Image (cartoon, rainbow, N blue to C red; front, side, top):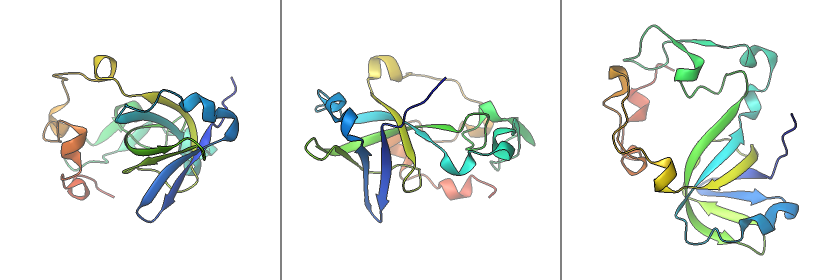
Amino acid sequence: MKLKEIGRINVEGEAMFLQINKEYVKGLQGLEGFSHIDVFWWFDKCDNNESRGVIEIKKPYKKAPEKLGVFSTRSPERPNPIALSIIEITYIDYDNGRIYITYIDAINNSSVLDIKPYTPSIDRVEKPNVPKWCSHWPSSYEESGDFDWENEFLF
């Protein structure tokens, strides 16, 4: 298996954008009109043997059980440090291969592995079930911006 980086995440203060590598810029054609995209990116800082060996996590959330399996969390420490973020597009600069975004929970210069358009018919679940310990979390991406996430984590 071989992954190819298609770009990098650029975080400069409040300005955030995906810088797409020149050979992949043509792949952005037709993206206009989509308000959101799914961005698959690499947790660069967790690409080491120790982080890749983590399969169980000590209680990361205040209301969570004492231990959780890594696949029931969004921890960056996991066998393959792949991240998925739903991102709102503010502007696409096709000439320079940049997708300007409102926010991404990544550090500057993280590798972008893939981009897919967010489509409600495939990506949205009307009434998903979640464990009781996280059932008070916001029910949408839009509501998450106003939620007190800092009060949820133990780190």
